[in-house]
Length: 539
Image (tube, rainbow, N blue to C red; front, side, top):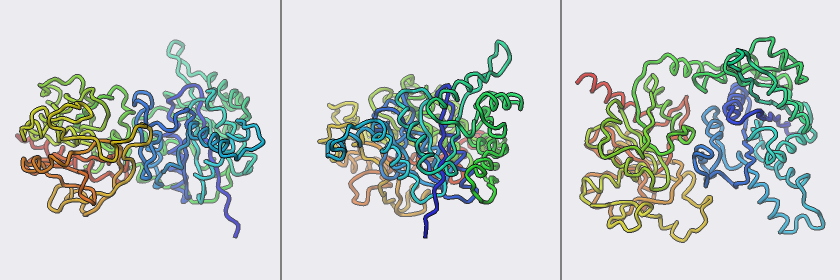
């Protein structure tokens, strides 16, 4: 039997970066999946890095980790949250990976007698990666990172241009996301940047089939008609995507304008209409639900919220599980002194997220101590668990100057140290404990109560761990190690039984939370914060 041809939707961006191509692409995927189609998604990143794993979060935002251990672009988090399809290393390709593949092929003699060039050798590898991500699906949505005109993105644009020739016009749609700015001085929205962006795309050989315009407010039909005229497209193929108060409103916004119907028409797809009742309920709760709790997030990358993108969304999901909205207050751990009461006077819960390096560590430890002593619900993730262990060791167990060897190589009590498997590793890229690992939970613990199962699988990204030499002493002091690796050698979760909610995990549960299926740890944490808020109000 002949295999059905996969349809391809290519999403490019113009004028400026940061327009939200990831959210737009994920929204399109959500609409097509809701029509009953099997979808996959792919992000092509033009940077030369092999992956974003060694980048500073201020450079690139968070690193999203997949089950198979790939360190990927944060947009893959949008893909998983908006759809039911899990992502893997196949769903993210960088220029660094492409050139690494080409150079290795050349060294192995696969191009013998040939001059290795961008076309066809580099573009062929890019197309191979696209087809790998599209295997066995009805529709593959491919987002091209960066902005039209970026020199490093040209091979990726050329590859998607060739795809139409390879698979046929009837199997490809090009969508260009662009900016229509509002110029306050003259009180007008200007289409010229969009015209120039489309012109640059056409010079490379791609005529966009659909133009989606990012703007501060909805475009009138006159402006849509003008864009269609100057960009050589139909007036029915120009859509607007104005600013919204929640990203989960974007699929609804695009559906109302009929974007998925237009895509289905262009690709000759016969399917049911998209049903978005769940999306409407989520958006209604986020917009109109009562504020259920106020959570303080103590980090050192708080000046760029994208550094904690999945965490931010997972906390909102936790609020949805409690039937309302969560207000998030980001606290710079570098600014916290020994007395942190002022920073947390009005919060109902404290979350200490992951991170690397010594900067801001003592502020996080002070936050943990304040939450422990004042019985405020606290949740520590990855580095956050390690901060909990260090604080407990210092102030409960009496291990003076207890620390992690990451921050103090000469600490007399290295309660956190480098994992044995990491001792001889010199390279930094893709060498941490990455991806999904199993964890066994201890009966009678809060962790077991939350998960309601004995074994779980969660995603990891770390080099350091709890030092087993101190586990017994910490346990005698009252720290419960409620989750361990199946062999019992690695601490995965810890908690305190006589505290309303003091839970730490070495893994990153935020990567598996969705608006329609909040992660149980975030749901339980927010529920504890709600209970704490109610007790404060009553008291």
